[in-house]
Image (spheres, rainbow, N blue to C red):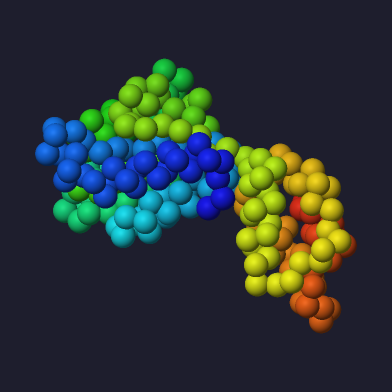
Length: 238
């Protein structure tokens, strides 16, 4: 992951506290175990959960909300309980990806039945969460979450769109296996990718590299990069 320094530090702090959990416990302190990541799509929130799993050597358990929710009375909350119980029995990074799917504000949701019950159940399970691993929830629309959700997390931070430094580093890292022309105007490349997600930046770099390889060149030229970015921009406008 290529992140702004302050966001990188937030991730690293969760990892350090998990590694020192026994030392913290000796002083009556708890590590950050419930983390909410928000920000635009494609900026690395789900990848952030995978990164935490990798750096803590915990397995990743991802919740599929479409499979969890049920039309039967009370069954969705029961399914959610099963997920939290499984996380307690087996240390893992429990990923509640796009948690707004079930955690939307109760004050705006017209469905006062099963949907509200699921939100209430989620609030209760978050309150009681004391599993040996880490819980990570992600959302693209934090403003739609029930405001009571935020108080249940030990840390809440944004994974933002990449800035100039992150765009160039992402591009160069993605192209690390191929040679890059020294004639590329990085200021122009960065300006063209400004406002796009990290995922789109990586895709542009990969497409530029593939264009060079397919015509038998060993060097990625500025034309390859420009065409790749233009194609992504056109796709987004459509």
